[in-house]
Image (tube, rainbow over all chains, first blue to last red; front, side):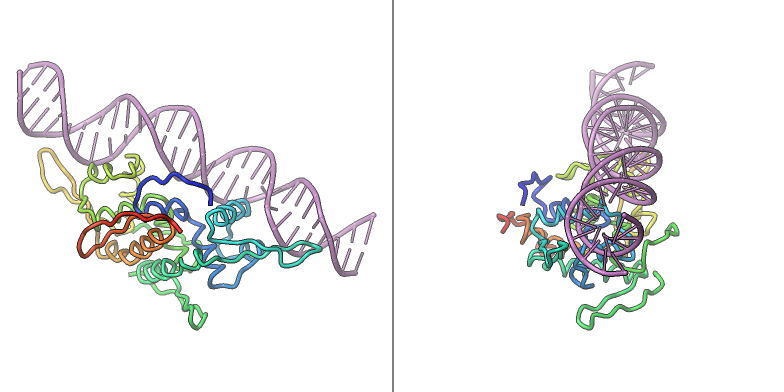
Amino acid sequence: MTQHEFRSDCSIARTLELAGDKWTLLIVRDLLWHGKQTFQALQDSAEHIPSNILAERLKRLTDWGLVRRAAYQQNPVRYAYSLTDKGKALEPVLLAVMAWGHRHLGGGRYDPKSRKSRKPVAAR
Amino acid sequence: MTQHEFRSDCSIARTLELAGDKWTLLIVRDLLWHGKQTFQALQDSAEHIPSNILAERLKRLTDWGLVRRAAYQQNPVRYAYSLTDKGKALEPVLLAVMAWGHRHLGGGRYDPKSRKSRKPVAAR
DNA sequence: AAGGTCACTTGCAAAGTGAAAGTGTCAAGG
DNA sequence: CCTTGACACTTTCACTTTGCAAGTGACCTT
């Protein structure tokens, strides 16, 4: 991990320096829950992340040790991205964010145990 | 709340459209845990949020119904910001983010029950 | 040789960010 | 009465980030 000057000691402030944007947690979501492993697969998600942003975020997540990149074949070389333990440890964050968005923004819900998604619901 | 076109049905993607930046959750943190109520108090936090950003985020949080603004005195008018139930419901998100940042980025920890902060710890 | 896939990279306009200074309201002090 | 000061923002502007589109290079299939 690159050494980094944090704004403050606050764990929340620090985490937001890594993941405080509209895309990073979606990449983690796809790696953790939706079996996406390749650049292409990540790019094809419903939210249509621009490829330059995806490349930059994967680099950052790799630098910070949440993601690793490995060639899974040669000729042609193809890479698989996967979460490290540090990356997988974000699951409770995803679950809490999802629960809030489901309850208050009417978004869908995904159940990691059954690996199934439930329909969204009207916001209250 | 302003009607808003969400990128997708995903609850996480939706929540990130509201709170996917480096500041929003810190404002919620200060309102929820640190007794900050005024613009000034929020601005004086350790992370030094720029005042234009603070104003814009408070407006957004208010539009989305997580925060309310009320004059607590006249002559001169002074405003107090506070969280609605919808805003308070973000506490589990804050807790999960904080736990991750404490464990993996060496940030400090705050205990809502005792209202005390613990020292940061070296990252592993 | 031509076309296709994958994994990015580049170019560029538009939007967002942040430091600093400014505005308007009112109260208190000299 | 006039200056100073607090509070709650707003404005300005340089700089950075974002996002769309197109391009690149490696390699494979037809």
